[in-house]
Length: 95
Length: 294
Image 1 (tube, rainbow over the protein chains, first blue to last red):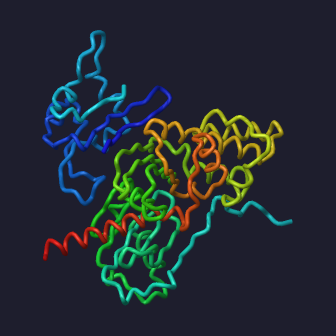
Image 2: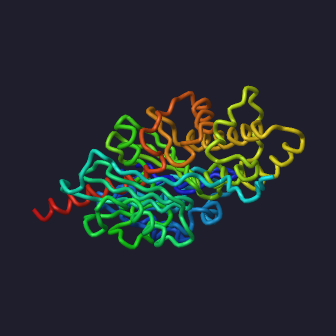
Image 3: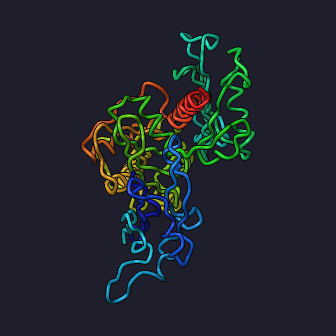
């Protein structure tokens, strides 16, 4: 499942997408995020499953444009720490 | 002269229903789903996975109280009591505030499951137009979520916005959709933000626009906004709309037109999707627990 967390407003689209089929709940993205945007919890979109998956915390969902800004590359593009830490490549950012 | 001041145009009709063909006394598993939304609360009771009774009413300022009132109204005159319900699931904004629920499940999962029950297993895209947010959901043939996108950052394009417009134009909310179907479709209002759109509408009225045309411009703006949300996720047939706005033909027909797709007519109140999904998850969780126990 592709879980999109974030929003769209006048200034653009800000979504972090977690592919829960790829995510193994290892939590490395949680440790690497300096702003505490991510957390690992039971998959709330599939109440009958018990696996753990990453998601964006409730607190950050409506402000990830700002929460993620410190990691966003300026000039030379580099991979974001959370994306880099994710071995199964389950994390993507829309902006 | 009759004063129109006291008429509450936004006030939609609350309802309850019991299935005359079912008897809960024969049931093996009785479950309930309570969807405490920001605007409305639904309580649904299902016996062995079939819709038995429901209530649909406004959410008050107190979520636990709204949940209690909804379930009590749903159970009224059925002879069924709360203690006979094996598993109750809470969903919606107030899902953690349902005192008698064994579990809270996010409304995204519940709406997909509910739409699968209401419209059949061919549904792949669900648009839930709620009271205060709007969700685009993709699901598989079992009603399991495969992708979702939610907009809850503002109330534009939601039931709450429509209530504000009904009040402003003094048109009963049930009539808004039909009234907005004008022959000469105007340009949509430029902002769907409820506050900005309201001031724009006041300006249009002053310019001499009819209520019908103003409603058309607002419904079109609302439809366009949710279509952009859907396009990001991708729309796959079959497509269904749930939530209160699904009853507004003015918005629904404009979404259908923009997407060049037809949404099926609901056979039950589309506001019930979340609560139905919750009750179905309740049943699945009971079955899972029983299987584990042997």
